[in-house]
Image (cartoon, rainbow, N blue to C red; front, side, top):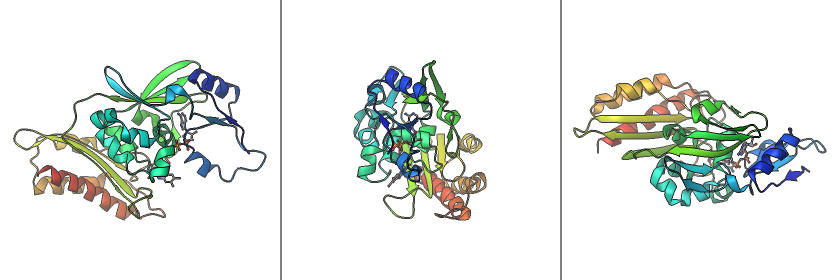
Length: 282
Ligand SMILES: Cc1cc2nc3c(=O)[nH]c(=O)nc-3n(C[C@H](O)[C@H](O)[C@H](O)COP(=O)(O)OP(=O)(O)OC[C@H]3O[C@@H](n4cnc5c(N)ncnc54)[C@H](O)[C@@H]3O)c2cc1C
């Protein structure tokens, strides 16, 4: 059995981590304990529970951003009016994660630190320009999410550091925001492909700004910035929709695995984007 350390404050958590460098941070444990299932008896790692660390809990509004504590479970994020106001796209994604029991345990920080290409909070966080706040005994730093996630299961987290908060800038809302996830069944499914989109139209019904991100079609979240730029000023008609489909089909680089083939994922990624753009028209 693993020893579990249960700090109540962040400074205590960081001190315990410094004293036990091999300890594993544990938030909701929905990823960690699944991955540690094969630990050799007598050699289980020490676990550092973050569940009671006050600074890592809850959602607060600051002047320029919304701050979500890393150990805040998705059920709390879904229920929070501030997240509905400033980050409805994150609410849409959080509602698709696991089932109610998983959402009561699984945390936003855990989803980010797992850095799975299928992590459902990630495409919205990229589009919301999320910054990841980190703390260690040496001090604090914050990184844009795209700089924090380095590859499947790899992050910029350094020895002795913990993710403390996820910072979401309080930018004006986009009138059209959509998260769509496709899986092998409707609930409790890992994403085969996911899509997040935000867009606004100008007075003439042309695209004024569009942001898109895909999950499970590359080692990390995929964005196509050249396509986003190219679409500014484009009317929402069939030729634009076709252009989007083609660009996405060529731009994503999925792999084949147990859940789906690369070709299927490529097709779904293109379809999710064309559906989103088509719906902007009305
Ligand atoms: C049945 C089931 C269904 C699931 N469905 C989905 C789904 O639909 N979509 C989806 O995206 N995921 C899903 N997951 C995966 C998992 O629930 C999520 O990734 C979840 O957000 C992980 O959060 P956690 O708090 O449980 O993390 P934990 O398991 O506690 O930790 C995960 C990793 O992050 C590290 N970590 C956690 N918090 C911190 C921190 N503050 N600082 C530093 N390191 C930290 C841990 O050390 C560990 O390496 C599912 C899992 C299960 C078991």
